[in-house]
Amino acid sequence: MKFYDCATAPSPRRVRMFIAEKGLVIPVVEVDLANREQHSDAFVKLNPHRTVPVLELDDGTTLNTTSGICQYLEACFPQVPLIGADPKERGLISDLDWRIEQEGFLAVGESFRNRSKAFKNNAVTGQHEHSQIPELVDRGRARAEQFMQWLNEHLAQREYIAGDGFSIADITAFITLEFARWIKLEPPTDYENLHRWYSEIAARDSAAL
Ligand SMILES: N[C@@H](CCC(=O)N[C@@H](CS)C(=O)NCC(=O)O)C(=O)O
Image (cartoon, rainbow, N blue to C red; front, side):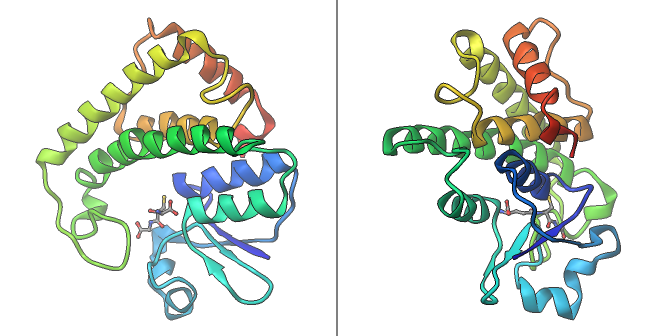
């Protein structure tokens, strides 16, 4: 297997953390997004969607979404379980992970991509050009704030986001909070549950990657 990564980008960081939590060692190919390597002929051949992360399997098959890659690795390496140890847990963790991605991670991305001049004609990741919509800068930020409020309330009765232990949902939410700094958004200081949970996740070895 080969993992196509980019050290500075949030989506492949989710997979990096997932791989580390599983204790796996997978050879890494660094993709230079800043210099548009995702648009090179060689990369487009690998992933026509022009995004990272990508996992290339030994038979040449490529998986090119965070979700697909993590589901594959979970099935191949069920220990340590990160997407649930039984069907019910798997459903509950996947439910929350989807919500965190949609309402948190993508909300931050919406605000960031529609503001930064670097993405003038690439407001949406992928192969198609999309111009920016300035109104989405504030809308994305407002959605990200709502997400943080929800997460703080959700964590009032729980140590981890889903189930009894650390899971992919914790990874997605942690990276979302880190990504939110790109739009200078931090959770309010009185979100005590959220800060307690964040400090615990940030102390894990995988969080430093
Ligand atoms: N749904 C995809 C999205 C991946 C994605 O958007 N990756 C960004 C980096 S965080 C990317 O490759 N951007 C390339 C670009 O902006 O041109 C996934 O989660 O795998």
